Length: 560
Image (cartoon, rainbow, N blue to C red):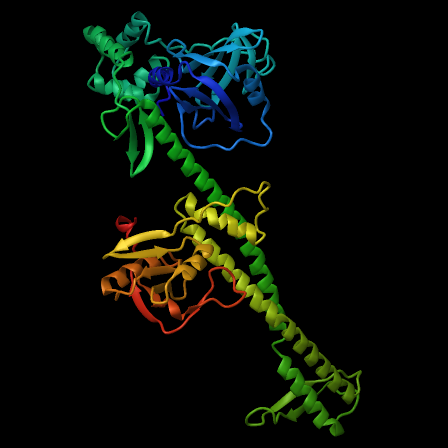
């Protein structure tokens, strides 16, 4: 990511033009790596986002809302103490380094001070440091002399920028020219990256393109190359863009010949990082929910396995009853001390002879009672296991249905109601703070042949979809697979075959069987779909249905 001195020069210029003269209204620290400063500037409130995360370090203006923690962290309290009500007077870069300085005019009732907040955008070394008169007041990430003897970031110590690297500063034209003369050929972008300070490799690749992707030494052309590099790096010209690869944001640039265009570097940066953070948060939440459900499934499978084992232990229940009956019927021929006897089993077709083991220490009547006792115990066990098994199967099927919906989740909307469903099922702890009820998450919506097709995102939505349907709407669900409930809004019109086929393909796509070939999809009018009383979310029964065999297809181009 080109969060280098070249990009930050343009960022500082745009931030200064947008925020200079703005008054600090509010400061929050939504996470340990981010501080948001709300300023009233240019007739509106703007949010300055300062992030020090190793992968998302940046300084930009953002409109994405953040939630402040109930208790403000220490650094946030420090900033509130020293910057609340202050006026931002200037934003600039410090030399040709990856450091932005925000200068504030801080006026109190009896005091006035000039304080500077440094945003060091340096990957895993990124930091925020507040100073007054060149002395550190506080830092987001503090380092003492014991931790770093070269650079101390501690209150009361003079602020010093990071140690310079063994590279030429592009602002020093003589030093840059000397480095270019040392180019012996090869990968020019890599050479520029190793030789010039404050530049990221993507920027060096753009510079190499400006120089014609040269692979030979510059020789007498070194001065001309330095002129082009200086003109590129210190020009006010920008062409902000987000570079995409396979539809995903790969990088953002202040000056890029292609990509998705934006009106400013700040806008391109915010779009890029917002998309990346959104994808990261989605992936993390999805993994967390999958972990909860996988643990739940494992527990339910173990419970079901134990119940099935108990059921298998009762498999000879009828045999024990028959043995007891046969001993009773032949008791006249038996005596204590026998270890077995053979009898005609008139309970079985053909009346075969069966050998019945006996306990030689028991009398014949006691042997019969032993078999009857075992039979009655097994009978009671089966009576107790049956409802437990039914409940365990229902619970396991419900968990699998949630895992299926989770595997098909594509964005944060798909997870929002599912998280609430898990809280309701007791699989996640309740929210600490009750918030205002959010509006219902919209269904996945498609338009095919003038008909609206709706698909539920999870079990809760599937129930809501069924409740919201008209009696003559067409309802679809895959056969023998967990899937989204899909609905065709008919509005009293007959549904053409191509619309029905498309809806079935959508239903097959949002199912466990999407990786298979042909999938059977049942469909019927909504009037024939019923939800049993007390059934779990997403469970229904249906009649009067027909079946289509289709290939899964999302019909993404038709999604509204």
